[in-house]
Amino acid sequence: NNGELPEEIRLPTDSPSVQFGKNRAATSLLFVLHCASMWQSTGDEKPLKVLLPAIDLALTFAGSLDTDGDHLLNEPMDSPSLGTEKWFGASAYTANLYRAALFAAEKMARSVGSTSLVEKFSSKRQSVEKSIQELLWTGAFWRVWSEPDQFRQDDSSHISQLAGPAFAQMLGM
Image (tube, rainbow, N blue to C red):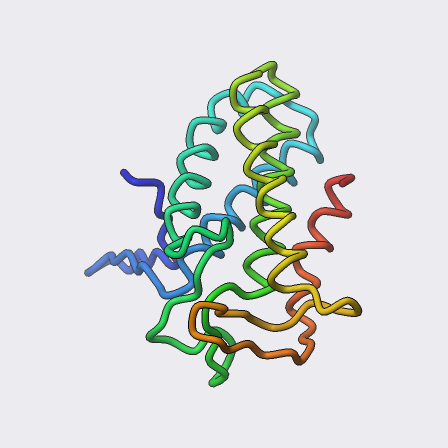
């Protein structure tokens, strides 16, 4: 397994199916954030020790979706990202989820004493934070998306951009 998580699993009695969707990055990031939320609400580190390799794999997969080397995950070219609106390059929604997931993973790794993963997640989070500021912050709000190599961006603001910061706040960032 490369760390990609299915967007949907259907288990009808006659034909189970697994759907890998176009929101591949968000699915992996939300898995990490869900693990962090469960850990934080129970305080139980035992399942965390078992889940940490899967969390690392999910974040490694998500990181592979950075196709242009800017440390931010690229939106799929062939699908609307929200309703019928198309996003290109890096979006503030996905970038902020990524930042929150890396923070959560760093916090979980620190809790179980995995120094190497703490360093890995912390280093990546710092690179992501820098890129978010450089590519997506307008000075007043996050732009919806930016694709600098194609010289295009959407400078409007969208409520979905607050998902990552909301998760981060819930996790004590």
